[in-house]
Image (cartoon, rainbow, N blue to C red; front, side, top):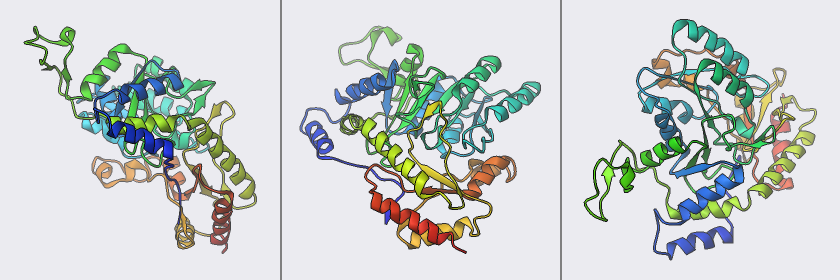
Length: 385
């Protein structure tokens, strides 16, 4: 089976992890802050906080921004569940903004229309979470302009987008947002096995997220309510969580980060080759905006309306041929949990139209050109009526 994505672990990665395993620290040691500094330096950001998953990063980002009961968070319906669930963890409510059918990202025009109506109804969002689907950056300048006009915070779900650039700015530098979140799951561009990171340029938000990721506990006398009892003393000053990343994971991530640029270059070379190989087939290729640089975490095509075969038939045929295609994503508002909350099919027609056509083809740095030829040959055969 040729998977749609997979991690690449080298001898250098193994050596980096083994070095930590032989050290005095497996967690809460020097490897985590080194990894945080390396990522912040790479993206041009100020503060980076490593955690055990991107879901955890989204959660503490929302809490740090004060999201809570009575508040609204809006996100894209085409995303993984965590982009919406993070609001529910805070006791807030969730709504969605339909996508632009060209980019498959949150539509700024749809967002503006929804904001106008929400202002009349007194239900403006406190937080908006645009999602850089497949690593293709959202129109962040347009979203930031709306944030200033309507007074909401922006948290970029950049789980797919480390290494991506928007208008010459690296995703993660938070030029257009309050907080940016990365994922380091094994199928992402670089991995820490499991892990995530929140980045911000605000020292205050960084301090809040730092507390929240580690039980709300501090050893800093300046943050305590009273004088320390001794050098062993700590205080819980907030209700936090055990969302810390281990030194083992951070060592793997730091090693992987040294290969990020070559990984991205290989992904682009393979995507360019897909563009040539798929010419003439009844599929719509992913959009890559000329003002942006996608990290190409996923390569998603859409079956054309005149394809002649259903997406299910094509999916099953390719899986039978040993090609591990996938679908990213089922619209969140159609999930049973969200239907119980009042959402219905038809609420976000562009997202639902996208879902009916989307098919993720294999794309990862170690995919060979021969394997890519197999993928395209299997797709061509599966599309035959």
